Amino acid sequence: ISVARQPVLWAMVIAVGVLLSDWTLPLWLANTLDLLGGFTIPLMMITLGVSLARLKVTRWYRSVLFSVMRLAGGLLAGWLMCLALGLTGVERGVVLLQSAMPVAVFSYLLTLRYNRDHQEVAAIVVTSTILAFIGMPVLLWAVL
Image (cartoon, rainbow, N blue to C red; front, side, top):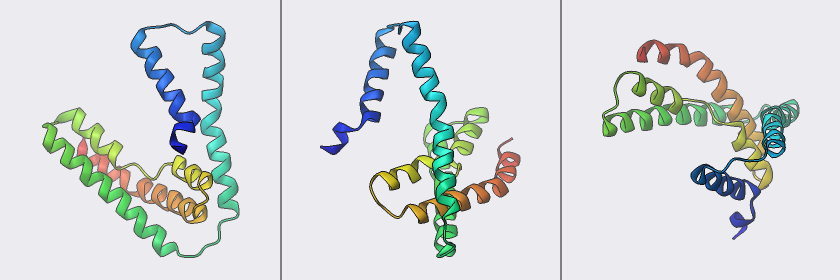
């Protein structure tokens, strides 16, 4: 029931309705939503940065383990989808690259929202990003 009260869910429902109906938003509303949408990524980065500044270096082995599991598991899931859908060439490369992306900052924001261990998730975001930074050139070489 609490999911139905989330503004993100209602925004998605409205956006899908607008897209399916080919309805055009008034210019003032489109500009306002564009500005608000442009703020989201910097605000997420600032929120993550504040948490990283307070991050206590404990249980890094768990962060590395979960990061490796995320990257390898995502790559495996992407590879299986490529096999199932018969994707080749550029489409296969895009699916594999997207599936091997690091943990999203949005995961951290969800842990803040629902009072979970946000410090550990922040550490996982950082370690998975570092591991992806190291492994992405190899993956790019493999899919190109």
